[in-house]
Length: 448
Image 1 (cartoon, rainbow, N blue to C red):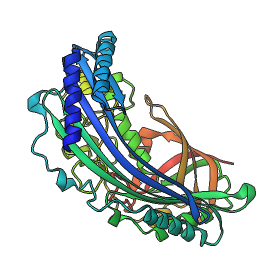
Image 2 (cartoon, rainbow, N blue to C red; image 1 turned 135 degrees about the vertical axis):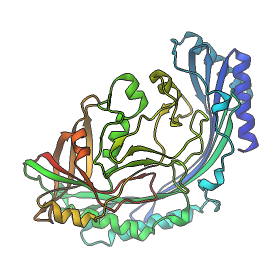
Image 3 (cartoon, rainbow, N blue to C red; image 1 turned 180 degrees about the vertical axis):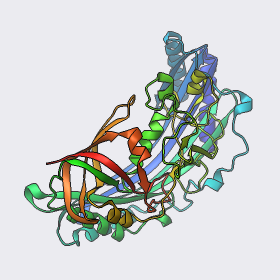
Image 4 (cartoon, rainbow, N blue to C red; image 1 turned 90 degrees about the vertical axis):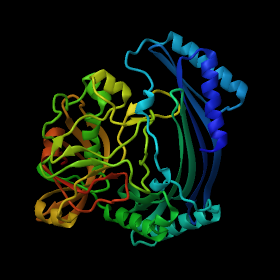
């Protein structure tokens, strides 16, 4: 950690102790970012921001309060701590709060091995503008594209520091590079839009701006002429771009906070089959050059590689200290937190077992059904898993894509959907959530 952020975090802890806190944890976030938007071949917006923010949580007995500020003057930090302590004294008691014991804390990690920070210099804004312009030009060059909605390139450097009164202190820096393009095809009421983009830790890993713009344009033109599909029960292939949402719903149901509240359709299913026997969901917080990698969680506990689902069987819950105590279990090192508020359980990098066949193979074998490439809205009953979402994509007849579709709704039972999944082999392995296209049999479509 930089000496300045370390000193600032220690100042917050000292101020909290002086104000009467029995325990505390502090976070300091430094950020520098630049974003360029291009439209019509000219610069539309250039934005640069730099800042430093602090967050403080104090504990008095079984009561706690959190505060945050962008003013880091010593006198402000003292006032911040005093307010936090005053708030904590009035807060309701929570029997499950508390910092980790010293012997539970992470130690001896190697942050450099995770490669979360690109050592390259910050890009010149002119370079970002050139990438955005190149992406837009490539999109507009596609036959049928009528206009560009936006093309952007951005860079961000963040430095996060944590310090706790139990002795834990750590920091990490992370860079983010991004290029995106949104293209519009068609005219009038028949206009359709689609996008492509890439975000990486290292700028050298980015796909080319030309490829991103070209793909956005091709996706937009392919959607022109969309209409409603027929109503009925059909197989649905969730494209790799949106298939991770299905696994996300499963992980949300396995979240310890939901289990502790009794608001999950997975209640009572620890050790039960939730996926086909050939499929597993692995969590690996230590993958290099992946945004969600961490050697420690938001409460200072060590993270570890583990199976969330092994050969179709649920292996347990996703826990932070609070949810673990409430359930009579141990934290799984999955605490996430921001500058304000307490921690909450969440996952790090997760990956679903990939299949043996390509997306094209699944399209060929599905016969007649829907290929979904975009979804809107979400109605997921957390207690039953009843599923309903708006969708658009392409209609498949006799194993071939025939026409684009929109304005339809997919409905089913999420627990049953997950048990009927067939994965393709097209997942992007550099993402923090690695999920291929997923074919699900027997869903209900509401269209024409």
